Length: 227
Image (cartoon, helix red, strand yellow):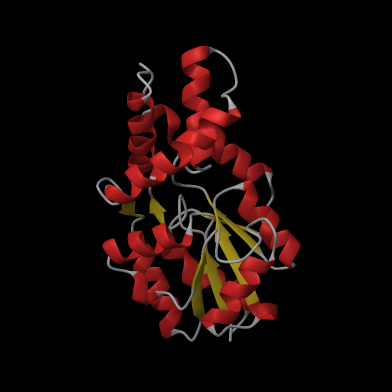
């Protein structure tokens, strides 16, 4: 079965607002004046909790964040995020309609994310779309995470798909590297968090295809994986 596996943050949904709000809870708790904001820091948000904490600490102190401080704040950030995980998060336009189209055309679909699995599970249920996907592999589902290809392969297996007729839809170099390591087509979105500079960086990676809008996905999947 042809299979399309999706990254989550920055690919299926813009989660940056809620992620940045959780980081700001940490900064407020430490008595810091710095606050991250979606206009400036959306691209940092999709790189993960530690990237956000480091960005705030570096902006406040002018120095790279202390790893011990980042480690101490990491679980605080995750708790804050879990408590308000879908306040600002939105699915990208027609993303789920495109996924449903793939399913109706006989594709298997799943998610492979570097978000902890339990948080991804909560978020997808809050958004009402968990049952659309045949698999969900998070950062902690296996002993390894992206860009190791094994989480991608496991997402394909659990979705009931075929590893030799699969592709990965993502938004960062991590997703691109995962696809390359797995020997499957890499598709990167040109929308989402970040600026035009970030989009230029995505194009510079030279993926097998660029996805500008989810309305393009069904035809793109057929072009890459056949009928």
